[in-house]
Amino acid sequence: MRTQTIERTEVDGVDVVGSLSPSRAADFMTCPLLYRFRVVDRLPEEPSADAVRGTLVHAVLEELFDAPPGERTLERARALVGPAWARLQEAEPEVAALFDDGDALAEWLSTAGDLLMSYFVLEDPRRLEPAEREKYVETVIDGGLLLRGYVDRVDVAPTGEVRVVDYKTGRAPRQVFEAKAMFQMKFYALVMWRTTGTVPTLLQLMYLGNEEILRYSPDEADLLATERKLRALWAAIERASTTGEWRPHKSPLCGWCDHKARCPEWGGTPPPLPERDTLPIEPAVHSPAESTVDAD
Image 1 (cartoon, rainbow, N blue to C red):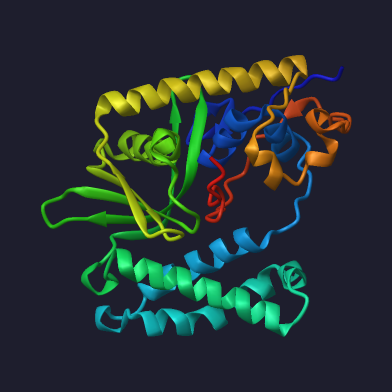
Image 2: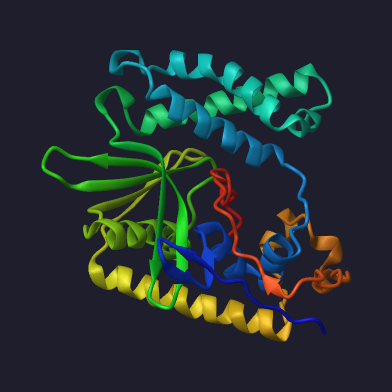
């Protein structure tokens, strides 16, 4: 069985042994084999209509805040859908193949408009002035693990309180799964705390699929626990890379997985590990539509 060591690099003069984003951390926690397929094998995945719609809605909400406050209306947001879709097709031509005809595309674009209407039910963007949007954050924690990702929005109150906001185009999880859903936000909060010295006051997940908001106020103990969890997670990834044992985990999420046919849990066979000696450090990629399906 072929095994791999971890590729090493430097960030601002600090030795880095590996990297994690919220999405890749969630992949390994969901299914180590999925992490392998995405990070080690780097197998291509077909775009899905739900994921692409999430990307489209995120793009529109980002652009909406470029307008003067008084012009941030639902009508303005809906008008931005067409141009945003055109730009998305130009950047990723393969997404056009998701729709068989103009009627199917029109219906899909209409559902994106419905999600934007849900956003306006949850908050009024005319009363907001985000401090930052699509903010890239990164830090290297003790042990050399690089944490990085993109935050949809950061709001700062006149009195200094910081709110971290993330949009989800799926439905809010059931209460028993709320802590799992908030892990991504604690990840961002940890990185921001380590880089600025300030713990964000509020973490806010906005679920447009059913017009719900999940909020959490973290403290230093929460973020230290998150940091310990990430160190333990990386140790497990290192073990898997050393032993070559990337174990599959069967769950309801398998129904959305592009790699089901090559998974042993479903009668498939994974491909041989790539012919290289190191596990690559995952590049920072913004995937705002990930984790938008409520499969709990």
